[in-house]
Amino acid sequence: MDQPTAELLVSEDGARALAVAAAQPDPTSLAAAAALRTHFPADLAAAALQQIALRRKGETKLGPLAQRLFLTDAGLQQATRPVLARWRAGLIAAAAPAAKVADLGCGLGIDAFALLDAGLRIRPVELDPVTAVLASANLGVEVERADVADLTLTDELVYCDPARRAGARRSWRIEDLSPSWATVTALLDRAPGGCVKLGPGAPHDLLADDWQAHWVGIGNDAVELTVLTGRLADPGRRAVTLLAADGTAEEFRPTAAGPAPLSALQDRIHEPHPAVIAARAVDSLAAAHGWARLSPGIAYLTGEGEGRPWARSFQVREVLPLKEKLLRSWVRQHRIGTVEIKKRGVEVDPAELRRRLRPRGTGAATLILTPTAEGAVAVVVDRL
Image 1 (tube, rainbow, N blue to C red):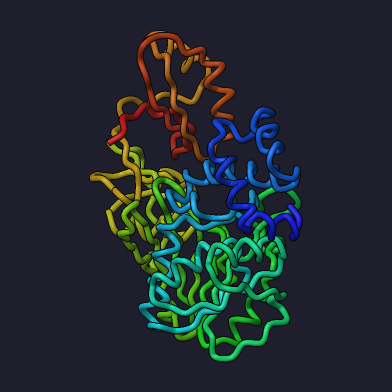
Image 2 (image 1 turned 180 degrees about the vertical axis):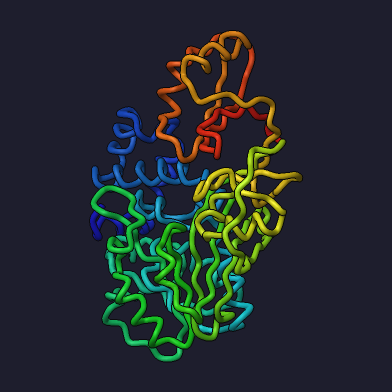
């Protein structure tokens, strides 16, 4: 979509085209395209149909909000989940009530909505002309067209969600950020406070000692690293934060625990949440629960109790040597038709191993493949 088409899409003619497109059962079909081209120019018809397809797709991530937004495919992929945007805006508002926030690279405006809802004022800035047109329509305010590297700041706080793409691929490499990390840190240095959204796997050495950092998880996924600086930060605070669908948050603050002890396999295995692993807080979690590692550097822990929500816990049923022929025999003898394979620290492709085990039958099993002091094993477990 080019800028003139985007401007047409957000006009009254665009609203009429969207209404007709929304009535199509399949906006990607040839029949839908033919129906719209009867009444609208080809470029507007195509844009309206694409918009309806994106809104329907966007409901999974954005909920009902998707139906009233103008979207792009790249913008939808980059957009923050609303529950996360609200939590992050709440952090900013708690530290600086009613402050003005320059939303740098505001994209489609999802974060800006949350900032406004938290009682903050916004200065939305976007370089891409099409995205700026759509974001202006979404927010009902004029989005400033500018390169953030050249931006003049006054007393605004800054919020930045750098794009993380290398060509057509999603990238978590710091070198692929746009704006660049050097530009982002220069803006943070100039502002009285800032908030930056990074990938959960961002290098820890990027974090200044006086910054606040949260490795955020939703469900079973690590979704981002949220960084706060200046007047927004509790200097040096590091936390793993898990968000529920209703926006409630639980926080685990790692301590300066030394390496967890090693132990033979006990009755239970615990798999830390990916956000705990991203925060390098596995040893701290082990210390908090009195657990041990099964092998150096491997994020499987063993010990009594359960670790929810910071770890998924499993009851050990049986321990088998990690030998394919033996595992295939075990699967056959127990009439296992569904096999879940989890692994760390062993060179195994779970999907390929599952195929070679030839599961047949009505039973189900979960196998955890891991190195131990006694060698690599396959542990048959039950989820707790």
